[in-house]
Length: 490
Ligand code: BG6
Image 1: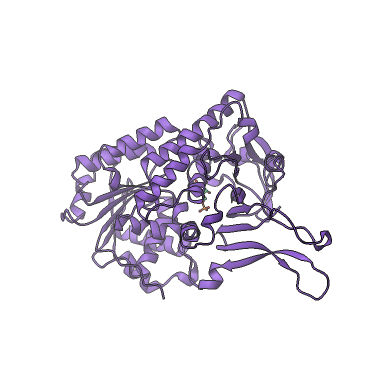
Image 2: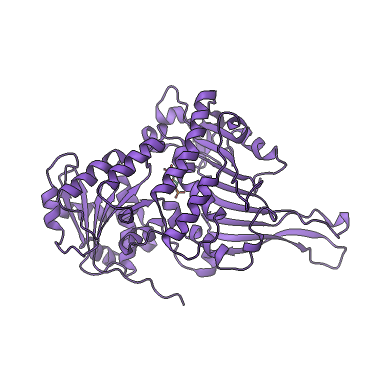
């Protein structure tokens, strides 16, 4: 039996952007679940902050609605929701002016040792301003933490600026940079799979691994986030953060402990070892795409330009990259990454493709021998499949089959899979930065991404159109097939 997680001492969570989409969809439901699990000690407070004039009572009503809208019916409990909303209050604050700050300060207990977290669920343009005012209004106590979300800049230069403005008020151990992929169960499981078993580590290198694939496929399009998305694109939105974090966890050396800095030191080494991609090879190592009208989610859908009401756009909604890590463990092992919107299915998956056996003892008519594959399904249907060769049962002649040893976490553990935010929000309170990005990691990721974007610009490499509901431009298939390999499952 797994021991229950320790409940944190009473704390104060202040959510800037408290009436916004992220708060309603993710943050408040996540805190509700932790409250149901008994993880939020009595006496804790959750304070919603935004510019809107709203009473605390109206905020509680808005939160109840959000819980009903975004929590599956089976997980919603009226009594628990009543207990949860009692912790909530609200204050209107002008983040670019001086009104509301004193009121906010009065709402927070003056005890300097009590943990206080400010979650900035607002645009990154406001991070510096809010942090500056938290400092000037005496709200940044030594036990204060600040949580920021991507986009952390749009290139290395702007990321440095964001980090510097936040860093002017908070020390690095007070800053929690969320990458919600790190809060996903299976992503954490990747570390346990690698470092909690003796089985894989001896094989985890270029002598046994042929290549790695990381796919994050989405069926949705740009939806209502057109203006943000068009200034970002898939490379910045997904690869710079989520996908590179997954790559780091696959590729890093074993850290000496499950300690935040030990792990982040190892991830940083991977990012620094990524072979740069520039003008000379950007056309052979990367593919950009933009979806057109087609069929997805069971119906006809429009294209990116119609979705965003733009006449023209050079923003990619799909990207595939063949990356390489220039170190002893990984030299010569390609890491194929691909992510896109409006693809045929929604899933995130890491595939470790092992090399072929050196020599077959079996007769030719026994069938092909496939390389072993370890498939880590991040979402949905979280689980792990280890593909192996076996003998087809029966008394006839020898026949070989490629089958998965299949472990579905839902079937094995029969527990609800918590949303990534549920874990991350309370890690902030516990002061555990293991699943958060350190400043140097964010910067190293941009250092690899920026030259790719620059090369796209200088070489005029526009996104190739692809039909919604397809697997992206055919060039993405050619990217891997050129090497005599194929995307897993295709
Ligand atoms: C976000 C991106 O970080 O991750 C979105 O900005 C994307 O564009 C989302 O849709 C995907 O997250 P998940 O958890 O649904 O895979």
